[in-house]
Amino acid sequence: MRFYSPLLSAVGGRGTATASLASGAAEGPRSVSRAVEEAVTGLAGGAPQLVLVFLAGATEPREAARQASASAPGAAVAGMTGAAVIGADGPLADGCSALAFGAGYEVGVGLAEHASRDPRDAGARAAAAALKGLDTSRGHTLLLLFLDARAGDQAEAIAGAYEVAGPRIPLAGGAAAGGQAQLCGGVAHADATVAVALVSSDPIGLGVAHGCRPWGGASIVTHADGRTLLRLDGRAATAVYLEQIGWEEGEHDDFAAVAALNPLAEMELSGGTRMRHVLGSNPDGGLRCAASVPTNAVVEFTTQTPQTIVESAGQAVGDALGQLGGRAARGALVFDCAGRRQALSGEPDGLAREVGALVSALGPAAPPIAGLYTRGEVARVRGAKGDENHAVVVVTFA
Image 1: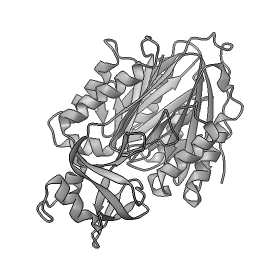
Image 2 (image 1 turned 30 degrees about the vertical axis):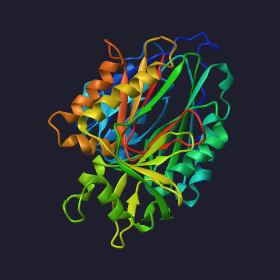
Image 3 (image 1 turned 90 degrees about the vertical axis):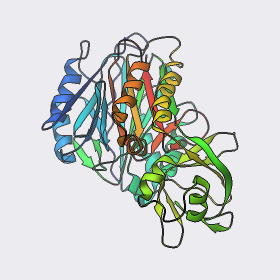
Image 4 (image 1 turned 180 degrees about the vertical axis):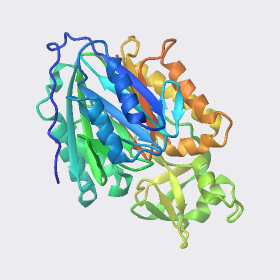
């Protein structure tokens, strides 16, 4: 397991520098270079401390990592691939979005390879490397996690990072989609956890929302094996699931399309819920999910529509803005669920409507924004858990 040596930047004296952010987005060939260059040149003076890079489409991840580092010399560069990327002008299926952080931030980046050997340990080690040497007492700290969904239970990686960061530092991010690569230090990685720590004297907000509504009753998970639900209420999980959402088994020939609109909701002792994306059905009647649900958990069956998905985007922005103490956002990051994208893709202008709702909710003058569609989202403000599905996560910077 190797670790990227963090770039530590103490900028402008503690609590005195004004945060500087700028974004860029581009489509097609060399989109990574063009997006990063646009973000870097848009900074209000000074060299970039960090550039976050999100890409989707034809650009090979290794080439993307090379382009990103070459376009931001001296800066820490990190990011990942997505099912599509998000910029201020809308979603891009083949392109890149980037957000550059200039004066006013302390930055650390950590990398843990071979994450599948022990996801919790990888999360802890990446977080420790990112936070090493940072003065988190100077103001507001955020820890971003870029994960590989194939490396095991994302909840374990988040738990490891939480053990290091503690309850005071919020966590955000997601798992790579598309090419399923994490970018760090000019290299594209697989089976890795990348952590990015940001410290600012200015507030940082974190909002998370979903567009799911209860549908039918609730069931008890009577037998689960990792991320596969085998029995609900003592019966084959797929049969119960289809009954609860109102579908006869075999009635619909596209199970993925049905599941995209009907995730499960795992009930929590706090009274909240966490969505669980249903990936498919096994021949034995088991239900494969994107995240683990333990035996004896209670799950609700939910449904969502393109309209509720769009509305939830504005809700997440509103929650994130509400943590800035009345100040406007200077920039924003968005981690949106690829399952939500799938649910919206069948609607005319569905994806554009959602991104439009995100951008308009940020204010009359859109700040720099970058993001992507992920295979599982990270959002932890309170409590020890932060693994999400079918959610949109928005980070705002004052």
